Image 1 (cartoon, rainbow, N blue to C red):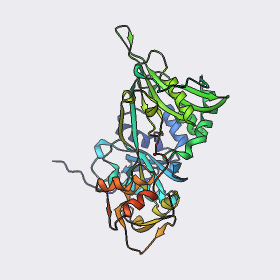
Image 2 (image 1 turned 120 degrees about the horizontal axis):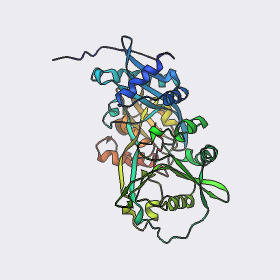
Image 3 (image 1 turned 90 degrees about the horizontal axis):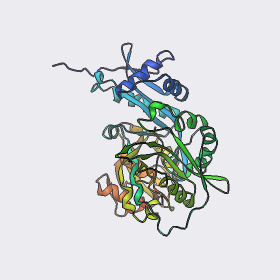
Image 4 (image 1 turned 90 degrees about the vertical axis):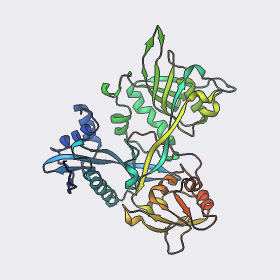
Length: 407
């Protein structure tokens, strides 16, 4: 039997000359091929001093990186590390390399003064042991186009047009910038991010579907909604079985949302519409047959506290009460202790009223789950009667969190 020794690896930033080899590690871990154009894109967008590689001798065998983001939180926005490029070669699994990478990365984010880390998990079971909690569940739809109809349809307003990539770069950010700070879980986007990621369209990203299309909805010539989508063509026995694959939809007003869905469900020769679904969308209640949306919920955005005090102080609370929470955090022990939370935030020696792990507090932080639901799942312990209700009131948000970004 061959044993795998858990030896400490050298964890460091690759040099400019080493970067491509390090990125190939991540691609290999996911079974993908690195394209020249993708490497140039990532080299431009991902700061090298935020990219960590684990070296076995001179060979890179694991990686973890982070993008610098501004994350919308209830009532504000905070710096957050968007964790990405996490992978370990199959030849070096189960040696503690991922733990070393996570340790280096979180220490780095703390030194940078970024109080939050966020990610989309390739495997849901991985990140809980490093203190990440489900912060914005993902709802996906696989809707039947033929059953689409609005209840008491008031009729269409405004105009929709397909815009070319140059127009999209100018006009879609105008819609996004109107609303991103209002949606917990959204991140600020630079012009480069729009060009290099959201609107980029290399053929190998299509995975059998067609090119990206950008539909812009306007009222009085003002952009108020958009949809970015592909069409996956499929024909059987002379009939179309094609799908619309939604990459992103966003609307600044309820009317704009209604008209955007009218357009999406009105595309010809389509059987199914698939994509992420914002839980705050009015579509479910607008439909005569909401069952036909075929909604499915899974975990989506994961969040980890890097600096708990800054994170708690950076969001808004409902009402003027406070509650004392005992927080456990074995991987980032500087977050542990008793915290008074509410209109006053800080460490306290007062008796704890609730007790939970930092990962479970992450699930309440953006408003995805209230403390009663955490208690029902045995993720929080009430030490003082009434504390669950008070904490639930404090952390209440006006809309559920949602993240449309693929980090």
